[in-house]
Length: 292
Image (cartoon, rainbow, N blue to C red; front, side, top):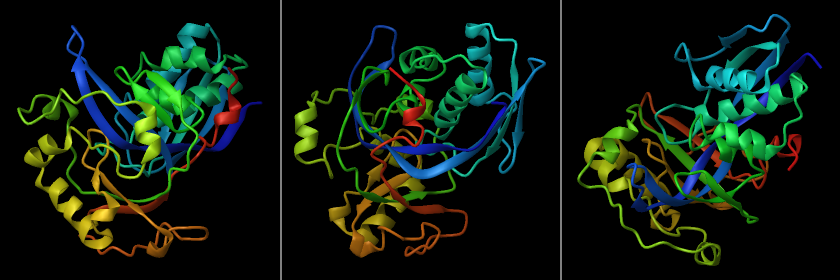
């Protein structure tokens, strides 16, 4: 096998995000539920015989040394392979959004190169490598929705129906470091248990970063208001992750369901804003490519 095409790299939502403490090294301890969604980037990866690693942007231009290239270099070094790769990315998931697009691209790169280079590493071995690249990368190497703890590296798979969502990203992005430096950040939420979430998954908890984000970026508050006005408070509109994207749960009556076109908007948004109707995925689209 010399090439793999049309590889999905799905975004994710944090259905809630609680900060429950800090480690002695300053890293925040969290609890969250991550769910992959069908808003995704697409990668095409071709094996090279000369050991070189190159990225080719088919859409929006990425930073010169992005997480995909760092992931490929890390796997190349750890495995000792002589192969390289051409990595083509069609980027549609916005960055600075809290949707995990860069981490997902890196994970899909690891999964694909594991095949193209004939390494046959099990899932856990790739996860151990992935966490050195970023706390969100191991999730995108997992089978699907997960209860997440620690700094993001402790994952417990969850078997439940995520539902459907409206996801809205304003033009402004949010640097995570600014949120963590904010005096408005909540860091002492009481830990929850999985059963609490599964009893009432829709609308459970909150995003502890949201209050700080709203103070830093007025567009986050504007986006939340737009979703509340369209879907009501029953949509439990909230921020996802530590970026500026927000989401609401939506029902079939809102036009999301089998056959719904995610490109058709039933929400009027300002120019420069990005909007999708998304479906939560019960399984990562490449879940069966890894064992263990």
